[in-house]
Image 1 (cartoon, one colour):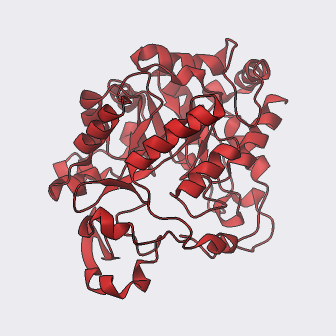
Image 2 (image 1 turned 45 degrees about the horizontal axis):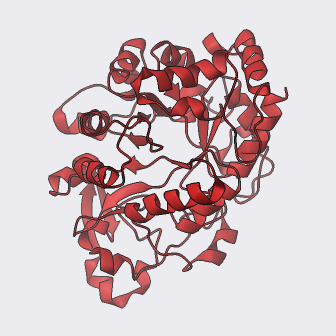
Length: 391
């Protein structure tokens, strides 16, 4: 497969040479070489936000922990991600409780990720709300106190694809972000190296309208733990650019703007009448604007390599080259091992819970020059990186 811009043949050769100089074991190691791969991290770190240049490239990010093997956003999932070699753990997607605590759930609606439906005492809490313009029915974190949420237990969100994860239903409670920060410190001490986390602010415009603004809450929590500085091992992300801009005024942490499909529109843009879509944000002009307040972007993988009507990869876009020229790192999402989540040419059979050729897919995306990737299967990502480094 051909590539464009920095992902071309010379970029791939230089990248492998650079990465080959680093010993990338299961736990990850600091890049000690210079060159195209290290330069991307150096731009990020030297731009005034620090720390990121010490991470291996491509960086393996445990998506909601090791969610391919454990129910997502649980301490069990986060712990396993580290054990499997993730360089950063996405811990977690942050949503508030009624009494103002930040907890880790994929969405504020928790009917699909907890056993709340089995609690008759909470049956009356089920309701329909408009979440970012979409009518959504279920149970919402903002209608529960932290004490009430702590009576629930996590369940597998996509059991059809991950029936083995249902074994762990009920084992872990919903963690607070304060608990995650304490866990991070504990793991850093135990492992003798800095553990990084990558929390996401979920639906900040929605929560601000409810009087539960999440940016200020996150800044206060980080400040209490001394983790709101430019060299703090906490990378903050959101799909709402204005939320990341707000965070840039509240904390010194490295920041990243998440980007969905090209034709989508960030909800904060919808709420404020900004007509731009993601397609506008991934132009050189849009990327230059993002670079004024953030250090990275988290695009969907389809923005890096689009798929055709049959679901097969086509030619890479110029996004990697353009983002690097703007001084931004790229951490696309999400690599998963199961057939339905892979490009068509890497699937094996049709079983929804069967693994395809995930290594082949990782190789195709790494070859574009991305700086890292979110994956539900960190161990697969670490091995795929070794393959890529060794050529």
